[in-house]
Figure 1: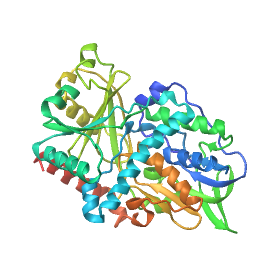
Figure 2: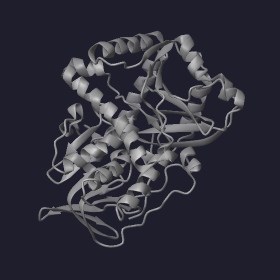
Figure 3: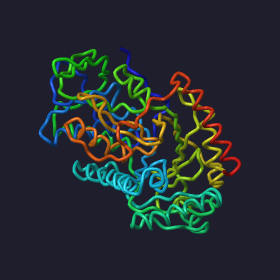
Length: 435
């Protein structure tokens, strides 16, 4: 089986900042484990950590190299949110469900912090100094204000602070926004450094756990065991965890995940290092920032560069048109960047789901999974690895709306790419008319 190749010809900023990452061997013989995990991103590694700390043997196989997929190429935003507002969850499912979802989102951020402290991953540069949602029009600002008031009243916590247009302009250096909300306890990290550092330290603490460039070709269940076949050997285990998310099309063993997610390409650009004058005027508090449009753009700084990302690219490969559109949007929000060189351009897949929520659970008594992070996955995908391990080892954690039974197959799956274009076009239209 041929190895999948890197999605972009140009290296990501994160990889360029990291130097040489630790590499792991291919599987070279038949192995036995308590839990075999397919996928070496945040979910798979967190699952391996959770299995190993209970005194059991995990074994992770990654079809490419650690950090190749979404865990190494995302924006590094550590958030405690979903694509659905908590007030909507409460209306549709009750206040107790909304509270459970709120608890899970904050447990996710805490778990990332716990792993970084446990393994000493200073290179991940986790900074939890808050994030700001920037309202692009009055309607969006009113919705942010209403949601913040609801959260204070119903969840009983300080969920953030409302900012006016002047305060957002001071924070961002842009006058494109009418206001915003700053949320505490969230932040940023370096995503490639986090995934590679976590893999390195897990394999040090629990040797012979990780195998790269080892695709799973097929899975069989027999004699109360799972058998995962690779080109280089067979793995026999009691349980299997599928942690393949938006890249479930790489391996035929992940078809049940593949048919339940819609891969949506997300693109990122990063500028040359900013002049000192721009450093002092743009994103002055080094938070992460996102706007409220449906086709949302987000931005942060890293390595003294301005990093700007968003959705809207289509197809299976990098798109010059998408990168150019990102740069135009960036300059529209931040005119001072008009003459700033773009040094890095890359993209990757986000796994969208029908209900806009991630899911975790069991497919059967031997197979568990976690998938569908909908573009907010650094923290949640990490926690979901722990939850998938809980399910695999016989527990039934309370996951509220994340439970696996809600993870529905995509109707008319062969037409998904056309559907993505239609939905994205509709969202772009609504954004254009201010709805």
